[in-house]
Length: 157
Image 1 (tube, rainbow, N blue to C red):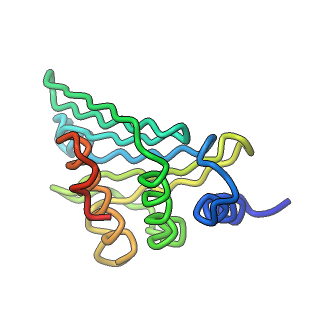
Image 2: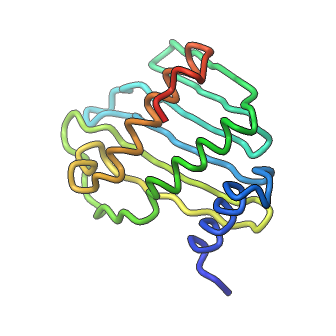
């Protein structure tokens, strides 16, 4: 049996090479959560399904917004190409307690056809130690902003 990360990399590469569709792939990213004091600091969630649906949700206390978009095949390939350029699964931030004012970040990719996934949890300051996470999160932030405004063309992928 191959390593799940290797299987995911091969699957994403097959999408980029035009050999496979994105059907069955799923990208999940969640940023934020409860602060150290127990207060809700707001949370942003990005989900992109292999069928092309992108969902951005934002919640802070009682305020909430949600945006949903159907992405083109070209947009999907750009997003999965982004993951191959900045493979978060190669980073290994250590488990630790969150520092004051850090954001909690969780990124996961799954191949639902194979029943495999790989994800990491890290804090915003870990991005300084792992530039690949910093670069990826800058682009995910740009994607979230663009989807929230309704135009993916504005994303700096």
